[in-house]
Image 1: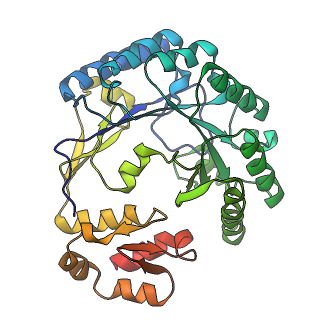
Image 2 (image 1 turned 90 degrees about the horizontal axis):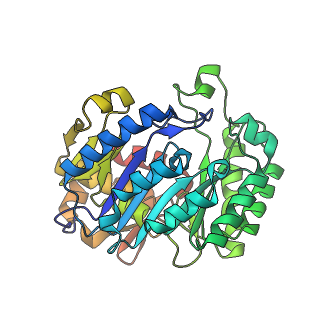
Length: 366
């Protein structure tokens, strides 16, 4: 594979706190508590100082949890940790929920160099929002969008979900159109996945039937390009020039730092996970579990991530002998079946193959 940078140029920071827990959420999270938040901030500062992160970062992504659930004073202290990086930063994203946005928080984001917002809209149907455990309304999403633009943000991504319990195709189409009216620069789409350890999982809630879920995905693929949103990855669409640079780091299988309780990272072919339980993280913020990837694992994982992109994988970045020894004739079989295709130096999923990428990866790994 192509030569990597000597150190990562991207940083992911996980904020585990939420004001409430969504019924489908399986990320590391804990309800907000002032004392716990201050303990977490002290632990995070220690981890950041010990990590000695390079100053020439190109992207920072603050995810959660709900970073915007922190109060203004905590946000000031938290974001100040990363101020030394902002001169070089090209893209600096923070995730927010509509109900926890205030003008003071948004102005705080700008002061600390944040230039991209990722907001969880999920659906424009208030009844469905309640059904999945969200506490905001669509009106609050619209208000938050107006506030972000008034304060000066021009790069805003919205999250949309489909295959929700009781969701109809009409609900989905309405949500897509309402999202477009808000004029985001980027839209990410997610089908509902029910994990065992979530509220939905414990209640035995089921997503919609697979055929309807697939129809919803293809409907989104049909609608968004009509308004200038081009698909560049399985679940992501943007106006030209507004692709997520940080997420492309993942899909290009580049290294990235991971910081905070519940974060993951990859450096020099070593993948690592920080403790997902807050108490464990507070006891030792430097702890992590790690695994060194073999050359075969690196090749497969780079393939797995690269095939998520609409453009696919740049084949000259791989050694042909590695591809042949790992995948044999399986790539040619998938091409023959119309699920993969070669386009000059790129290998990519076809329109039919992209929605069933997991099946393709199982075939490649088998």
